[in-house]
Amino acid sequence: MKKYGKILGLFLAIFMLAASPVFSFSISDLTGKVDVFSETIAKAMPFNSTIGLNWSDAYIGKFFPSIPPHFGAGITTGMTSMPLSSISGLAGMFGVNIPGNLPIGFPLAAYTVEARLGGIIFPFDVGLKFGVLPQDVLPVPGGMKINYQLFGFDVRYAVYAPKVLPIKVSAGLGFNRLTGGVSKTLPVSGLNFEFAGNTLNVPAPDLGLVWETNVFELKAQVCFPILILTPYAGIGLSHSWSKAGYQIKSKITVDEGSGPQQIDDIYINQLKALGVTGIDSNGFERMVDIKGFNARLYGGMSLNIAFLKFDLTAMYNVMEPAFGGSLGVRFQL
Image (cartoon, rainbow, N blue to C red; front, side):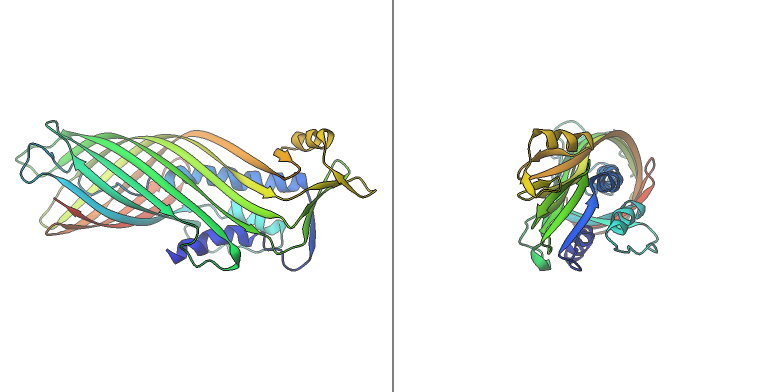
């Protein structure tokens, strides 16, 4: 998981402005660049949240009545991609060059601890996953704080599971919630933002990039166990509610040219007209809300050794083209 810290750390590297004590920008330019970044990551997070619970078995069998009862538990880690263009524009504003030669885009990591329980009487199963990354776990230098929380569950019904053939087909409904972000007190004495002929002074700023998504997904899957291998393929159709943006915390003031003064409603309304929200004397933010439908294809193969299964899964995001993949290991009866 050290790679996860390095990947998210690149977001804040955009804002590591140690070359000069004070930086000045147009609030409109910042808002435009951040909006592109926020819209892109808000569209990328629903796909990333689907990592986990993509088990090779389309249906694991009943818990009761069944001998042995069917259940399983394991861990999955993986990544999905996000277009580099959304980051390079924001980085270029601060003179930071983001390499453009990554073949699959910018990687976003994820992990889950997961479990699945077979149904009772009826042919269904229920899955649960969660991933939490406490801020003090990763050895990220420079006082950077990382937040990552993923929760999800699904219910799948076996629409085709004959006793003669090993093929199984299931249809199900799932929900995923992913929240994350990175924050750091910037190593600069202050930031200045120009707006409406005035200057917004932001001393010793604490900057955070935050995002969250809630996803409902309908999915169908087929698998065909062959000896110690289980190839599988599936499709998911989803609707998501996402938001992403930045937060700056600081004791801010406004300068019209005659010296700093406390921010008041007149300045607040001017900044709101430029797209800044949640502003008061302690800081400001801008969040972008995105709703939309999406579709993904996924598939792969598991290696089955006794009660252990090793999963390799590939994913493709259809409407917002992106790739993903995951590795998982679990105990399953």
